[in-house]
Length: 175
Length: 162
Image (cartoon, rainbow over all chains, first blue to last red; front, side, top):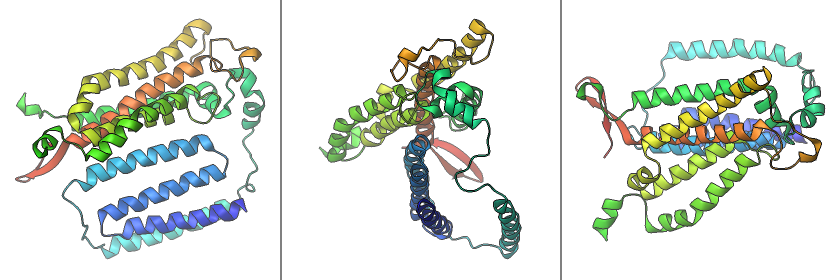
């Protein structure tokens, strides 16, 4: 049942992505991308991962607002470019190669829901007594793997520095 | 009335009223997600995004002037840097106290489990990340929406949006 629901949502996500790619109107394209994101958050909820589902929903809302506010208020509304034949054919060939490799890899994957990562079991059994955090996800990202979180914070910091530097109000030669 | 609307900017009166009612509740909900990150789903990142959404809501509903009073660009940059430095300070404090980078140096007892103050440094880290994400995402939205790219001659130029 769970797998059937996830498969259904995945097919819808693929359809939404195709609509987002093929739509000529930029606004409907952005909305289709948003629909794909919300379906992904529903998949996370079905897979019992509420932490990442919350993050997915709020980030999806925020990026949707940013995309609509920033891209739509620009003057580009309708995309009229047609695709060149050669890049399109190359894409199809690369997609086919990727699909063959992915099919081979998926055949060798463990069954749905069985973990192969040995480190997960100590986290689950000792997480509360080690860190005192009842939410195991938080105990992993801010205690066992806090170093990764520091890296992510650095990525966000660097992105913000880039955005502010490029989009600052005063041009450089006016000073 | 019409002139007043032009000066104040933002959206219609209905949107402003609803926003006035809702902004406090959304802010409290974001704080709840941040503070209870070690007990229930959520945490610094998700809560920080919700807090940033409050500021974006105010900016979209009331226009630029009001948000510049609450959170000027300088203050946003300061809060962003403060969050990043606080997170790093927790890591360095772990190194200083017990010799391990990011060591959870505040002891936890079985009695404190499932309480708000459980988890040692996790609560401090959550608050630091929430401050950082809140100010960071709001500033990204702010700088993206006040500038626009225009074609001047054959050069792209960044100008302030009217």
